[in-house]
Image (cartoon, rainbow, N blue to C red):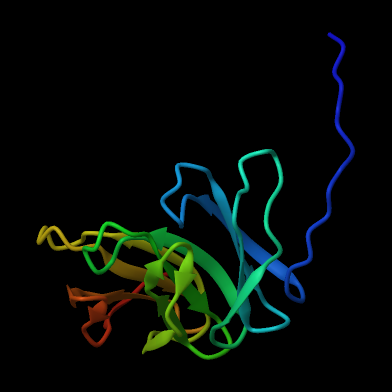
Length: 161
């Protein structure tokens, strides 16, 4: 097979990009790129222009050393929100989608020590996605139950390992 590759395009993001998720964050049916940047305590969003190119990054502040990123609608407005595990600040940041691929400033929720991974799933069957983090230094899992409108309960912690 002969393969032809186009010239690479390099996009600027924050310092020490660590985690990435691809999702349509501006409801235009095109996959956008969301990156957690450890070195700058930010998340970068590159919106897909639809022609194989992306817009320059839009930057939002999050907690210290963001290690993991997820995208899910946590406030039932049919728009994907951004959820981050911040290893250095022992928190999970929630950035609610304000429309057109823009986001509100982060709201941080306390979790265990050094959360290195985040997942968003309905753990209690109430049809609202909850936040789950794996906390390396405390050997725990934290669950933040979704209480509506993008707000979450205090963590419920389970020991693991």
